[in-house]
Image 1: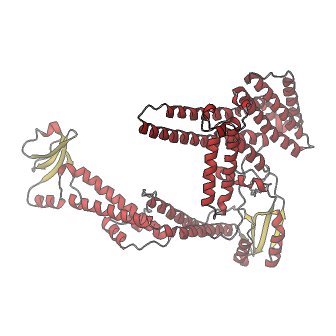
Image 2: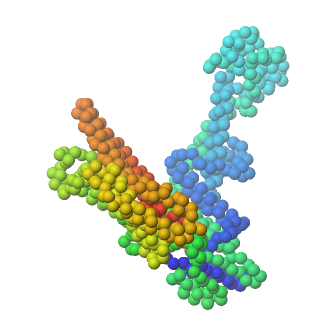
Image 3: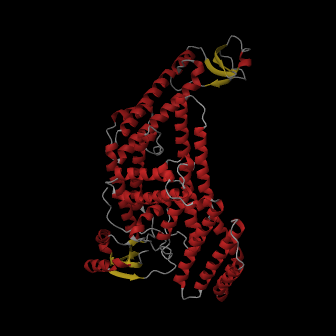
Length: 608
């Protein structure tokens, strides 16, 4: 269910605002409406959160020997350091103990990498000239010998005469020195000398790269610092929340007030706390169209694990839309099984889930995800057994223990599978319409939902009559369709002032109902494609014509890659198709917009 909420207004003495915030935080049941989301305190706390999260990412990058994805701020001291200062800072840096230390070392490593890269680019530019020292060129110029480095087309350079001293020709250009007081020929490009010698640049590049690598190695060895950084991030996040709540506790003269929401079942505890603290409390039912009411979803005990899927997809029903956890869980499991469609794949997923459960047995937070994957795996195994599908192996080649398991031969016919998919779609959509009708009864709008129920089954009969070869559409299907449309029109015509557009869109919506039924055939099409892909990889592996040892290795490689790819594509199809059928077709029929915002009470930070 979606836990009922009450809208809250809390009043306290302005002089007692901080004790009131601390007491409210300790109570831990009020979801504060954040109307003010900016301020100096909020920005400082947000910067601390960003710094802690950035430090954790820096440790991850160092562990993987990758590049850091951030640079020091333009105005920071590290950004202004030259190569020598960076090397000195890197050598003197102590071991990190906080997010700021980690970020400083990461910034130093980033700047050192930049210096090494810049020096390397300069060396590449002057590589055709050999060793170049601007001090030597300056000394020669002081002695009356003017030397200009140049780049010119190779064909033109041969005509320059004795003043040109070519060093190297590559990629159609000649590089050399022009030793003369005469002007450089027009076809030549003068190359200014480097700011420092190429030998010094080479040393700078090597030292900078070595220092950057040393800093990254130090960061990679900081695994023991991760728990402290996570605690730092959690504390900073709690401080940001506290700053946001404080910004929304506004003063009006000598009184401060705060608005938010509280679970109705927690109002007694809140009133008791208010009495003890001397607060004023007003609770009221939220407006039906209030979009800011938070959602606390508490499905029945056996279905609570589906919250992991909601969280992973970033979806949550709106406060007034109803809890669809049970049908979502049930149909998502069925869709998962049909889309993956192979008992062998299901067994692999179940084994992986059990292995993860053993490894994560001391982490209760992982249990819901493990339960969900176990249910999906078992559903896949059951569907695979009923359809007789095991890694795409032909039925006559299956081991006796698998071949003897009971199957449903009816599922092996394409027409039957399409009929089943259409039937599942009709049942799924009908559940939404019946649910709506029960909620709206005895109002006249319930007639509209009953009408859509009739349209849904009429479209099921019509689609089956068109697509399923053995199905004969009954004559009364059109009467069912007409009656459904008539019932839909009753509440629309009664409120024609507001529903005129809906009446105009009704023909398109009826046609869309047919599309919704047809949409469920994807369960058959994608599942069949998965089986065919598995069969083709099996045939490819068995058809390899190589010497025995190489043939065995090739077979293993093809099977691992092929079935691994097929399993990955199955997982992707679940994310695309199973999610769509629940969050689009079913949700449109039920009126679920997935616009809910999660209930986030102002409370003490959890210990990491």
